[in-house]
Length: 186
Length: 192
Length: 189
Image (cartoon, rainbow over the protein chains, first blue to last red):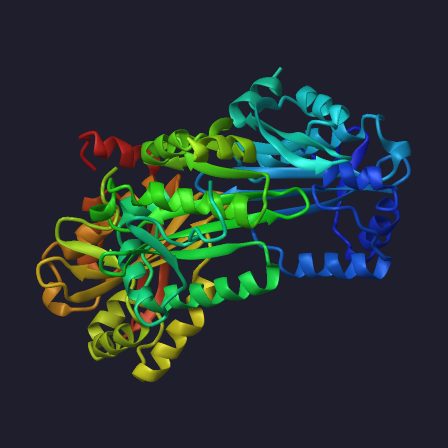
């Protein structure tokens, strides 16, 4: 049994509210970071505010939620976060959400690696049957990453976002356990 | 079309009302003992609930309404005898983007196929679009819920997303369907 | 889809705390019932305390891994027992605790019917891959009932319990999803 937390470029790490709060406060100063991953109106967080937000989240962590920090293998830097949220236990379906904080870390393959580690964790440790995600239509880099990881397009909620004076769709993608197994038993 | 004078909470046969803590918990408790209703109404495993449990849920719900300010809950009553027949909710309201979800259930099989669901849904939509000024309404439904799917299509919803095999019941997997309706689509329907 | 909560002899319900507490106080008086159902020393608790305990646990019990039912006889609607299921989320295993508190309803198929509903719920609503239970070796009636329902004896803890000066085993039983599905298609346990 290998180390389920380690990929080729990144590893999952324990979720530390204070460290993540400080990092998140910095990341959210770049409004594009926020707008790519969150539908809510952008806001600026102080390190204190963000830390107390994460502390509260951590306190109420239900058995349905898995929350990780993501660090680079090269220099152990905290570059992002990832959440797996089981929506329905008999169905064994979970939503995944991830983000990479700093613009200079985008487009370097970290997202793909994060998703690969996550899918292996989801299917071989949490024994899920499918993983779902929602992504904004104006985030083609993420859409491409998810397609590469094996997610299939399942439709779009039309015009659900209102930003920069126009409306945008939210795309839904999903990958089934059988599909992931096929891709991972070569 | 509609004006300020037209009632938001009244339909020909049903009306919206608040929770009646004295009478409603027992009635809703009875619905929860009908597994068929629960499996149509909710994705979570069906479970019967005592009136005490239902009452606690009402309290939590009203607290959430007050604190989160992103949901509205209505009890549905038959106008003929003021009987509680179901419940309806507008939730996950995303004010910045003008979006929400709707959900409704008519508790007793004796009250199905009487048009109550359709009248309820129409009131919910008018409330969402003409009172909350939202832009789009989403409804999530299991692929085996033919009645709900037919109603949504009749109201002008479009099937937008198919979350393949997201649910499991009766030892088999089912898709979860996501339907959407936009404001101008609703206006066209409502004017027709 | 069939009615998950209704069998041939019993139905599953959720009871008001005060009523349930009163009934459980009555069941308590029958120490044989307790000693068949429970490994802990028998005790006598007030209806008030039981009611408080039920109400306190309403929130805790309302989570994806716990499902609690009361059992009523269809013929006379009498509250005769309880059924609890614990869903081990990651491994899709369900643990069962079941008991018929009314002595007059023993040995007449009520427990077996309730267990049938229990297995149907576990496999058809909770998506379980297996259902497990434990019982005390001297509970011969339960052992027979569970075998009829399809459970297989899988092992036990030798001489784990001490009662009336005699050491007894606790037994473990289990039924797998495929075994149960095959039974629905006519296979015999």
